[in-house]
Length: 185
Image (cartoon, rainbow, N blue to C red; front, side):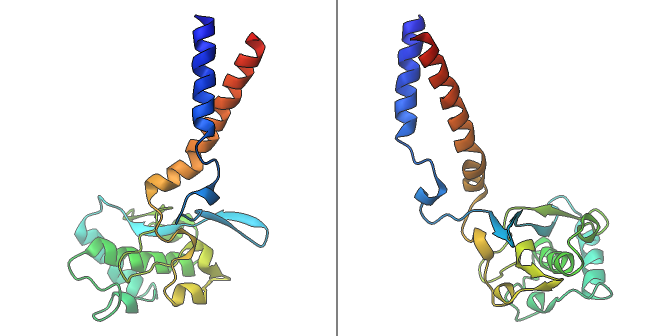
């Protein structure tokens, strides 16, 4: 039985070594994290919660576009993020703008418990949401203002999980299997 386990482990190791082990080998995918001034950060967006009531979202949206002084131009009629039928997407854009301009703190993304931070880019169609990595000293960088999506353009949640978790776990398991195989010889 030990021999069959060793052979199985060796075959598994050889099979897994045939897969790409770096993000560079995954086409058309970009990392969620990147370095700024020597510090690696994760892109974050402040978005409306899926379970938030429409009335609560509208109240928060009215405040953030009024006294909150968020830039709500893109969600106005004719703007790239205008959608009168999707209060969640509309509120998300305004919440994110407020969050980015007001210190990117947890309190800056609360809005009476109707918003939360996410690492999944909420941009859609021509509506591009700047991320926490597009902000310098409280102002959104020109990349975001020009409509760029930053470093996670076109990356899905599944791809993010695969890039961040899958290969380190597989590598760790392969190291343990290799150690067992060598110790059995």
